[in-house]
Image (cartoon, rainbow, N blue to C red; front, side, top):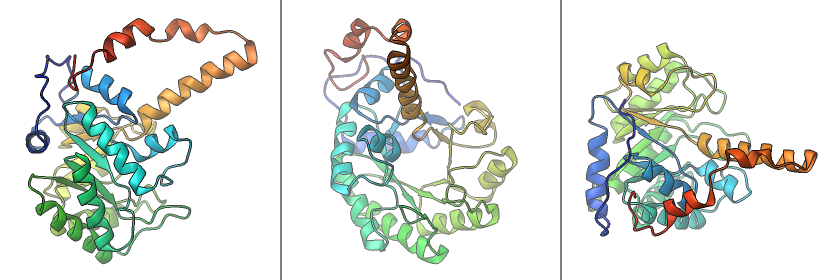
Length: 292
């Protein structure tokens, strides 16, 4: 798995959506895979770009937390405005966490995908579970219909949108590997470009999933029970590694620890480890849309 390196200067004129889409699709063909981190706002997106990552993925949970609400509580119109901000923040390709498509019906999923493309992203993921309390999986056949509608919407776009289909078995408390694989295979046949089963942590299970499909597989780091890193996942055949809301949660964790020290002890030793205002100022100003 290629490690990010400081990126070179970019031309001030941003690349077209089509060129970003082609670059993003090409990353999935790379034998050593790639890491796509998940920013939750414009600042985190720009910092990740400056570190040399080659693409970004939004996180619905991370963004929701930044607005002070739980995951799946952000309205679709609000999320689309967020996607537009992230897509415009850097020159990198952006793929979007589109939750379950903001509706049960296949036409709702297709509409959400088209809106995301209009917002400027070049890829997006669709979950196969209803959102909210008591999340539950859609029936496999119906879930495949939803992915098929999304794939048809993606193919109608003037650029190669990368559609990721998610099997949510492990996330909703139904850790059935056989059903997870059957779902991913159904979504593959329905037209998904990338397959993703959040919550997989066992090396054997990940390797079995990779062998069972013929599309690139995404695995998510950030679960403390997953001991494998990106290089080990690449050796298993994983093509894409994301981190979900874990970067956002890490940032909030540091904030809470610092604020607790301030409230309980009246001290600010946390400031010794904080990034300086001057360093952040150099990162963000002036900013032309690409890595500095």
